[in-house]
Structure formats: structure tokens, C-alpha cells
Image (cartoon, rainbow, N blue to C red; front, side, top):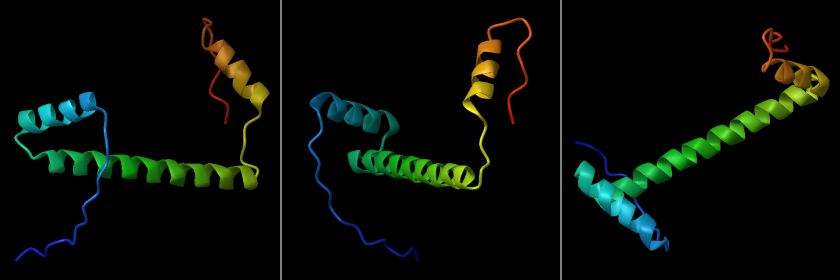
Length: 90
């Protein structure tokens, strides 16, 4: 038997066009509005947690001195529009 997860009701006012898109998606997927919103919220939370993880990882690289100078990156970026692009700086 599956264990039920405790839930909580959250209320949010959303613009009517967004609410209508949620309704359209729910109908198209034959799912409830709540299911659509839970999926969207879970995906957004996961995206923000990954962004936070990557930010902390990048800051740790900076603290450890693992950086590439702006001038090197600029030269590489400028070369991308030429016939002989430079290798990506490392």
C-alpha cells in the first residue's frame, strides 16, 4: 500500500491568461489543474536549486583561484566570428 504524502493548500493569484493556459494543458493531458501546477512548481524548484548549487560551485572555483581572465575569454569570443576561431580558454 502506498503511503500518502502530507499535503498543504497553497493559494496564488495568477493572471487570467496563465490560468487559462493551465486549464488548457490540464485538458490536453487529461490531468487535473492541481497536477499541472504541482509539476510546474516542482520543476521550478528543481531549477532554482540547481542554479543555487551551480552558483556555490562557481564561487568555490573563484575562491580557489580556478578562473579564466576576461581578456582571454574576450579574445576567444571575438574569434568565433572569424574563419579561425581560437580554442575555448581553459
